[in-house]
Image 1: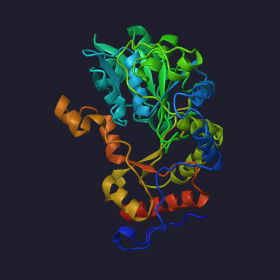
Image 2 (image 1 turned 30 degrees about the vertical axis):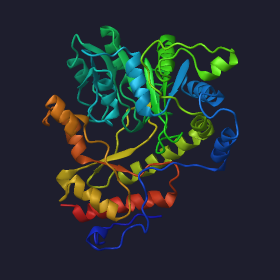
Image 3 (image 1 turned 90 degrees about the vertical axis):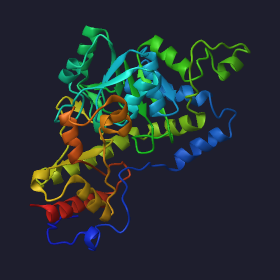
Length: 403
């Protein structure tokens, strides 16, 4: 499909004909009959939770990312909480992270009674700036949580070097980045702990679900206990060993992922390479279309990484437009393109403003990006016509708002 100039087309928000008849969401799961059958098989089995599929999925994911251990959790947020606990965060401690992320990244620090400390981001990739992180270190800093924004790995080597010098734990929030690579290493095998999410809009889904990968056996054992009420053994282990006794050794949570979810995850994992390849095709088509389109700054990719493309966030060149980002968002949605915003910087949420006194202006790079960001539809189930509809809608809307 050829994208033609759209400067004379009426916007749907003003009563014109939308680019699409039906809404194209920004993300969507892809489930086929093999996924459904895998779940059905577990429903017919003896174990719906804490059974064999959990360990099988953990082993398979660990192999895929090149880590020694993988510990599953009921969500990516629960996995972040588990990692913060395993890192030993406690009241009085601090952990440094990016403000441009979903609130769960910082919230997991609060769950432990510690304080999240934000550091500004790199303008090009919108990931944590190692120099800014270094400037925020104090004697109370115990961990750094870089975020692989949109699936683009953070500058992990620099962050790990910083952590090594100061005795810190690096918890990589890779909830966007399953399948990404950093300097020819798979994300999940680089940081001290790496957290993944299996929400429906991610590269594979378990419905809800998460995983922490690590090479550290102490972290792995702590994570397993934490997600199971702090108990030293699981129900299946006790049945296998004819053992009734169990002991709670730490204050944990019920953050277990079910066998139902893990069966789905295992089947989805067989499709991961194809899903990643499709997302990269979509990103390539978008990049070619937006490279020279007035008013758009496509995502920038560092030469040392291969992103996973969970999101495709463009930045609007507002100086060339007569509208702000929110007006463009509304116009795009009227065209039936389900654009989204990733993210409101965490420190600007009301809870963080009221608790910590943020007023805006503290992290100018992140805040400037926030004013311009718009996430376009990006999911592996998109058809070629869907991609062209998105490109045409962006062209149409920005042409109408062009100065």
